[in-house]
Image 1 (tube, helix red, strand yellow):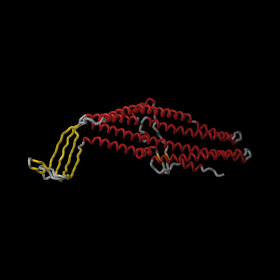
Image 2: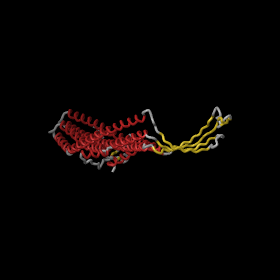
Image 3: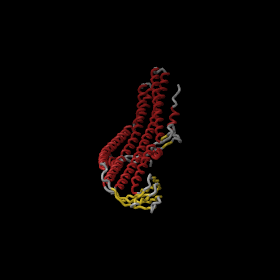
Length: 429
């Protein structure tokens, strides 16, 4: 009977491809610098930076140049007693330049600048949060890919063990020791095992494509992830994790910046109740033969005061105050959410640690159990069902062991992310 090409398949898994070799650190650098979400966040950060420049603009001179042509139906004239004399041409050109400089507005502009600065800070924090989220996504997929390769090896080993059992069943059937039914039973178990191997292989291929997608590469490009030799150990108590999260959580930091920005914005709006002092000057030339001084300079120092705006200013102050109260309430809500996330990630890590302890010797015991059951079957004192159960137990134990190991790695990354730690810095050392 044609044997399953298990050796070639195992070699394709176990022998790394130099072209597709990838470390976690290399992948994190690519995702953190060139990821799609990170690029979008940086564009939004650039927009916020431009907002600071826009807020500063009132402190700079506002300069404008103008030119116009005047055409009158009647030439302007004036009466001096019984004499009527023209005072201007009916057609003339006028052009000039004006400059306006804000002198003082009781903090309206400076508060707007501060508000824009806090908005920029919030945007920078959001960029860091997006970068960290992209790093977490890559770490989780990377560990998923490593786990899928180990599960593929487990599936391959299962196929190998079922093939060995079928060989034993064929030998015993040829010797007339067992019935054809045991051979058929072995063939069905082997076929099912090969199906599970194909499912595991497809899962590995899909996860490799997900890694390529995050790295902005072709989905079918070969990927051979390398094991993470050293992972950052949280090694922290729940109370300490909460303290770190409250200090470093980007969500809380961004909200704090939004609150400060809104406070400055309210100050800027309230300054509209007060006058604005300004200085204006300019130069004008008028092509009019009746003008004694066609060229003229001007300088004006003045103040403007908004007596009534239809209630618009008070409405904006009320809107800003309500939004500020909403942001403060939201911060309390987010603080609880952050603490819950940290606790959930912490408990998940503790559970994963316990699972690793439970599975430490399970594989060795399952292998020894299978060896003994095969010997008993070969010697005619054991049954085929006992061998098949032993293979199933070994597969389940191997699967559980790898899931526990990589489950711990994922849980550790999740806790560090919930605490607000920079994953790229921690895993990219």
